[in-house]
Length: 351
Ligand code: IPM
Ligand code: MN
Image (tube, rainbow, N blue to C red; front, top):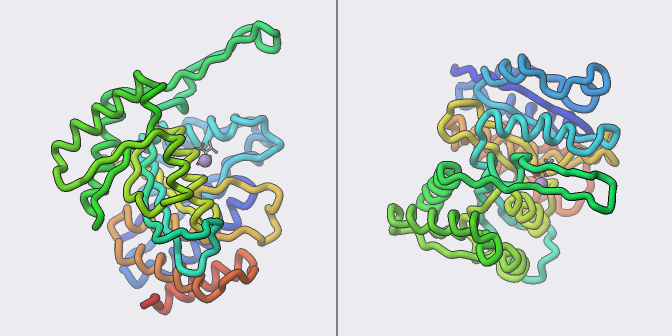
């Protein structure tokens, strides 16, 4: 049995509820693949902030760094000033652990309600850059609150940072049947960063002659995500565009209750972190109303990252079967988690 150490940051709102179900499914699937998980729970988020004033102490960050992977629920609470936990905890982890590939797959499972009239086949993955762009926090404001206020947020793009994520996206495209990569940016306006991205994609494309390359401005990409999502295979884009596009991607594939993500450090110099795309949803916290499917699928991405694609496949199959059966029925967080765990245990899969 191979044992993996898992840092669990359940976080705020519905985070703990959905994380519990993801852990349940991991526990059920582990023995079948001769693996086990040793979990350490970290009390981080709003509760700790109010109790101690701490967001992510350096010692805790270093402890977390010592694990094989991180499972995260959700971060953010209305009782904490906006940005404190998001920047100080979630983004801090992504940056400190060099999660430069923010992997966000979108697949429309059979039977999932979508707002699209004619969705066609939706199966793409967004490779969102995770350590640069406007998220670096490079900006400032002066004369705050006066009519002369001036505020900047500077998007940082380095040749190193762009090339490594573009390379990763090409490798993913190469491994998929359709072998198509779409760069999404806004290089007609954001010419400095945009041209760096375009040049980098064109240069790396030379090494991947089998991958066909496409470019879309981000505004046009939002149209195609609604009118013709089947055209996408792998999308590579910057941190902020990726944030926005992946909420839209979730909306067309059944909502954020189903959207999973991995904050991946492909070089494995630090643990990767897996989390549902959704937030802490304080309005429904503690009511067993949250759909844990996204958290469970994120645990699947974790298994894949650790080298167990078959185990990950069982989770996807369990989710597909569960959705096909449950239709629109409302079930509690625990009921969904139970259903997924028992399907995974039986190794049930959809034909
Ligand atoms: C996400 C979230 C975060 C982001 C927030 C909470 C900082 O929206 O994971 O998509 O913007 O990356
Ligand atoms: Mn987001």
